[in-house]
Amino acid sequence: MFVLGIETSCDETAAAIVTGPGGTRVLCNIIASQNDLHAEYSGVVPEIASRAHAERILPIVRRAIREAGLHLNRIDAVAVGNRPGLIGSLLVGVAAAKALAWSLGKPVIGVDHVRAHLYAGCLSPVSAGEPAPLPALPALGLVVSGGHTSLYRCTSFLDLQRIGATIDDAVGEAYDKVATILGLPFPGGPNLDRLAATGQTRKPGFPIARIAPDSLQFSFSGLKTAAIYAFRGVPETEQVRARRAARGEKIPPNTLLSAADVAATFQEAAIATVILKVERALDQHPDCRTLLVGGGVSANSLLRARLTELAAKRRLDLRLPRMEYCLDNAAMIAGLGAATLENRNMLGDPLSMTAAPTTSV
Ligand code: KG4
Ligand code: ZN
Image (cartoon, rainbow, N blue to C red; front, top):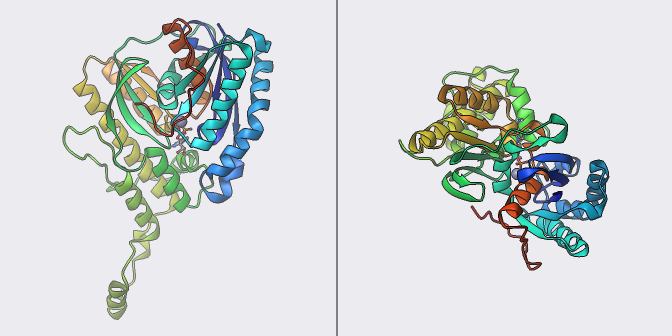
């Protein structure tokens, strides 16, 4: 079976084709990033994103078919990321997927992008040989992206129960905002990760939100504020400034950290926050011997290192996606779409299937 996947939920226009049991073998994975279009705004502009998807979707699908060395009529089903995301962007992919599936007389299936991130660790390119068998379940799932920071208990890839989520910023969003303040180019997360490698972690570190002793909720807004103040100084009211001036005081320049040290100290605290909650979740769900991880921040160097140590310490089956499947991609959509169709005897969704801005989990 060959499943074509389409992904347009945010600022990547992507198409991929998967095959094999569970759709885990990736024949091609094409991603057209829109980073250059959004860089001058330091963030994704929804209208620009959907226009770019509309221009690029057909050439990207054609390229995927060509790179897989297939003819379009060999495609057995079309999977599309139909939630969550920017509604105008999602609709471009959904319209293309439905039109293609209808014209081929093949099923179309809508795939939740957040669930698909958790499937990304099961994928490998055909060139890598036989993929590892699907992991044992139940699993603990960790999604760390620009829009989500959540923990799930997964009894199957289709049956997830959310057991924790952020109460304010997502971890990727905090990375992006701090990176902007540090003057790093868009997209901030990977640039901050690189800068952190050149800085020193200052003591005491930035705050790690514990929330409550057994809480699985995340919070990154306090950490973000600490990083901004360490770089720019704590804002003062006019009154405080006047009082300081009257006393002839200045903010001692050495209380401000360099961009590299802020990056290193921020990264240490952000990743420690994630690991703390993963450890708590594992303690609360000891039957989960598999750890599924996905989302853009799973590309982070420190997170990958800390998760690898944790998995070795606790003897877990860690499914960390290959770098090419961490950020938004269509291989994960095609893969989970194929697994879902296998499970449903190839029964797709009705053509009335549409896009939704929120996740189903
Ligand atoms: O999964 P994704 O591509 O899109 C969403 O579904 O949100 O994740 C994008 C997020 C962005 O916030 C980006 O800055 C972050 O992932 N990111 C990273 C790294 N690479 C991407 N954050 C930290 N370190 C990285 N190496
Ligand atoms: Zn994503």
